Length: 382
Image (cartoon, rainbow, N blue to C red; front, side, top):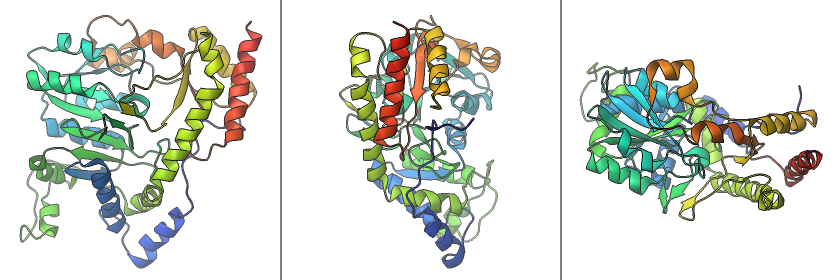
């Protein structure tokens, strides 16, 4: 079915193809870590203040690198929300660690920081904070728990590029932060990601892991006279072509961000009446969080109403979508992990959430068309 208003359109600012041509015809460099990759790396480091950013082939690979770098071993436990993408858990399951899922907060859909400490055992090694919709988890509380229990923290900040918590960039609080630049993200290279490393002493280890287990990066910096295989590793380097495409968008990051925020605010304003009378719920943004308008969602009364709304919008050629099926209810989640405590909100809130179209090229008229359709749906249910 062809939608008049699709759910997502990958961002495109118009200079991407020029960058690709430069990479091919001028730089003669299309494999990893060329000039455009280095530009993107520097951009992230300067914008976030992290000690080091390494670009990867995906957000999933960034998480896998972070998992390796935490040193988790078979049987170690990793506390995380169940309401997240499977890559959050997969990265640790691949190392035979055990995901321990805890409940979420119903307001932000993020991990409930008050449920973490009770889930800690003598096998716990890592806490994963996933910043849903680019809205920060309660990082002060999470970092305090981690410090008191000598745990590492990985931030799944796949949705959180250009977002912050109390003025500090998301992805820079934990030991490692993981970004995604998938085509559904605010800034895209098609497939791609990045791992942010807080501790400078971990950078060399990360470079070796990313470079097939070799010390090639140290060689190119002139720190050694030849490079060789020194540890286990893989090839996590993205193509220079991907980073060339992304660089065009990073050059226009503020424009993209401000445009998305404007569309997000329009959604909020036009749906405020439905929220005001309790028909739907709108996203909650804590005052100390600066979000990036990664998505705009509403919450319906229940699963039946959500299913009917999505169908109603589809009939009008508007593509709306639900989101994650909680991992602890999935076959792999039951096989590899466990839920600690009571599932008070994870399943109930995930059943109510529906995401509306949100992308850089979305126009004010299209937003208005969507909100009018949502209002029309609720008129039919009176």
